[in-house]
Image (cartoon, rainbow over all chains, first blue to last red; front, side, top):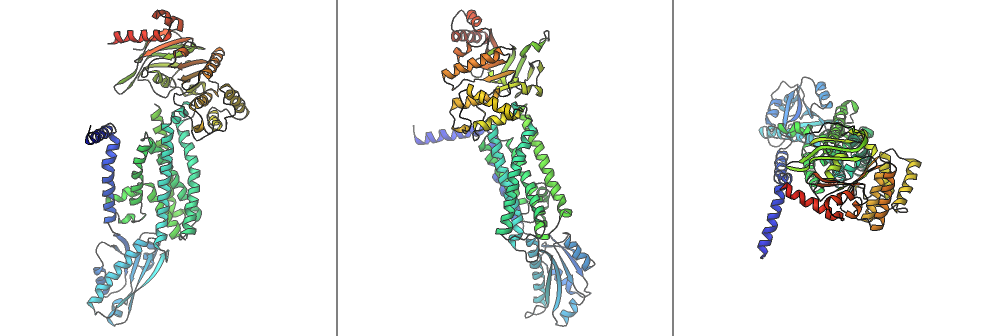
Length: 365
Length: 253
């Protein structure tokens, strides 16, 4: 028997196995495609549509010329009547920045004096903050070419609503923290629960007076404790190792991470219902990691995602965790602002745990 | 068809009436009728795939019958209230490998509400019985197969069930200890506990008060070991089993 024949026999056996295991086949074929498509959309889209308020007090033509020079799509300009109103809107998160063209701008530029425009920036989203200054620089550059090469006629004076001096690290740490809490907790719970199923201990447990929801809650408690430890360690590393900005309440940030861990462990139990062996559980991991990595706003602001992807982004727990952590750590916001995110995270936990318990009951029937 | 419920089922420990279980196109149980009286040691025999484990899983509420009805200790199942009165030892030793013998048994004890002194008392009594005294603090993965089986048996007995269901309990247990097991089973039965046991060992089947021979999801012969052998015209249980098995093949095909 030749080597080729033996090799083909093995190939045939593998293909036959896949024929019986449709799920693995579907995963092998679809997962990379989905990942690739989502990757392409997310990184193909730069930061754009950054919401900016513009207060134009200048009767002259200069503001309109600057606005016309702005790169298309980068900023989403809304005209606001008063500077106070614009600043308030930046503080409450409606706009990433506000730009003020003072009354004497055109006149000063005409007279050859240095005219100054003012920006008020929310530094807590470093990508959007950078996009605003990049857009303005481009807008002013066109102006300089028009009125002589030597001198920049307009200066920019910037003040910050939040997180003045926030570095990219400060912006990324909340996201990476949520990502770590989600993926590892999900993975650990998933494997632990699949082990319960394959070793027969789960059905053995369900033979005792133990109820399905008790199994799930018992797991939730145990992993919840681990999640709390994990959250504490993650925050500790963030604050003391990365020297991450912590403007708001450390306790509130901790609560977000703990809730995130609870979501993750209930997701793990839920996913384990669909996996009969460890191998199948491993196949599911990309489906947790990729959406979290790409959609939850860790690297790319949710507002910059294609419109049809945004509802999807808000439909997964880590997006809420990332948003809440940034609000707390960079903006110093309290429960009155991040309460909604916390409620959503808690809601996910309840729904996931409930579904996990129902999944166990189905297995029993 | 389900036969009419003529007699009171309360006197029987287990009653299967026309129970059918299908997994897709495969029929694991095919209209099974089976009665186990209280205090009996009932042996369910049959080749692999005959439906023994399926019958036990339905009995314990782990699976639901496609058709027919099952009564256990006077209650139609499924009935959660029955669970504390049942003891079940699965074929595969479903223990936590990373936990010690004591930690495993503490878990099962506490699931039945057996804790503290009661637990300690029963633990030492049961461990002595299965010759595992002194192994309490050994991690299960370090135990031999037979020792795991014995630990699993203790887990099924800690709460003193009225009906003990044992799925091949003596696989991997040496002959001497197997004899001890049977001595204990007889004692339990003497005190009113009903035991339903599946086994491959014919010499063990002799110890049962009654036997049921299962094939392709149906009961093909039933009775005390002596009766079964007499009906087959042999004094060897193994031969009797083969006799009935071959007879159904002719009828069935």
